[in-house]
Image (tube, rainbow, N blue to C red; front, side):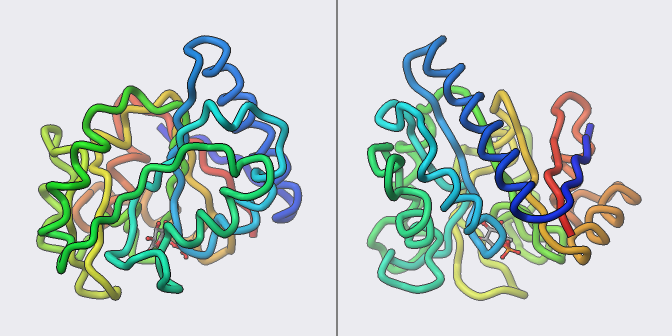
Length: 229
Ligand SMILES: O=C1O[C@H](COP(=O)(O)O)[C@@H](O)[C@H](O)[C@H]1O
């Protein structure tokens, strides 16, 4: 199921979104002593990350990880890890624990064995923030990749390596079942082009053609789409 929340501008969206996430993480800390936040990379979340970084929260009890990354070390401009470190893990949020999806191996396919144990034992996440590309990919679950059936399978491992044919870099991505194992799932969308992609995703059913459908049309999970033009 998908619930669409529309905002007048990015400032309103980021303010509401940051407050919601802080409430979710605070509640998790109150109930379990720790909280798990999964974020996406790319351009969309940058301002949200900056807003979140200054929020008043027991960040030392929060673990942050990415839904996916490009197979680049964090000195590279297109590394999602670099983005998270430069924007989210600053100010108050500097105290959070971060789990990297990267290992220093020649390929993502070689590195996945090192990354998998970091993720496979984590409990249910408290919040997952997904992004979405114009081809309907989410995390690094790309419609064009040979690994898409593997990544969307109900018994997929927590983490897999992927190689998109329409986007640069080998990738490492959390799988559909690992991302769905979360108390809250959000989809963060900025720009009218992303709303058109969302409409297209809701209008069809082929999850391999648009992997975001596996989340939006999941029979049990609810995805809250946070959108502004
Ligand atoms: O490559 C990626 O793309 C998606 C969408 O990025 P955006 O720039 O359109 O916001 C992102 O969610 C994912 O984490 C990233 O690796």
